[in-house]
Length: 243
Length: 184
Image (cartoon, rainbow over all chains, first blue to last red; front, side):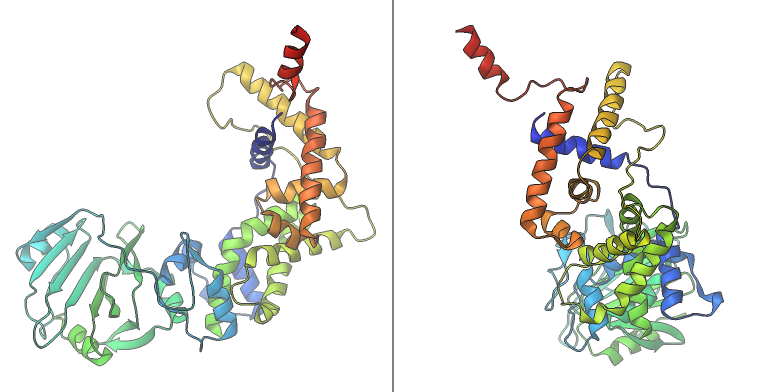
């Protein structure tokens, strides 16, 4: 038997070996955590089973700074993002164009009609220059740059933030802020947003602007505001969104 | 420090299946769950000593392997390689092919069990845990050259054992040349 054939046969055999099922990855993780530091019992979320998929996405494009505590830095180093490794330094280039079906609509009312979402424009900005509906789940309000301000984009996602997303934002160095009563997170660089649609399925959206981003949730809708603006201005714009 | 624990939880979730597979194959049996947990707890404790950029996988599995071996301290330690019951075929095959595959599986497994323990370990790491040579060296604590030589010797012995097995259809290397020579 040729070597290649034998090695293939061995790998096939490996896949057929009996490994009795054990506790789920989430349960193992919870058990290990409990031993490292006991936590109150009411805490555990079933969303941890998404952890493996999520973490890879969350740290895309965010530079790991020298100031990150050693343990966290060590753990961040371990993650591979679908073949892209996390390095100390600037994040990977943003994807060129999203491949999801998108259509440009003329006004907010039509975007509302297509998605069932309540779409309003921040009062501080006024009506957007372009409105793009993506797969009937995301509406992007695009503001082209003017003399007074850079390009701004507000994305509205039909879904709640995946609970784990909040947890791992802290790893990325996101800063928690208040957005008109709701909790928001400020992110310094490009990233993805993971949200759960109304059927509880995970959805992802990538950043398109290399800018500061503010993410917040209101009821069952998630928002992302991207602009090369100081954080307090982003927060003000976000807070000016009619409720 | 909560952020560190959060991050580590994700790491544990990601590697728990592989850790379990390693423990089970190396004979942990009913203790596999404990071995896996203990290994992760252990690993966390020394995480601060970790060189940035160093891979986690072989480092974790080394802890798992050592803990599993220590389970049976004093007693003879061996790998546990068993086939699953009722294995589904990878592709649709005719019944004869299925039967041959079954024979080949058992023949191969039997041949592996007849190998010296270190050869079995090499085969397990390289082909059943899908570790690279480098990773295998780290996990088993062997020089890389030993991984290489033990693996290739294992393959040679397996090949020799399987020549007699019913499902092998390819002629041994050199047969064609020999037959051509004899015809002249």
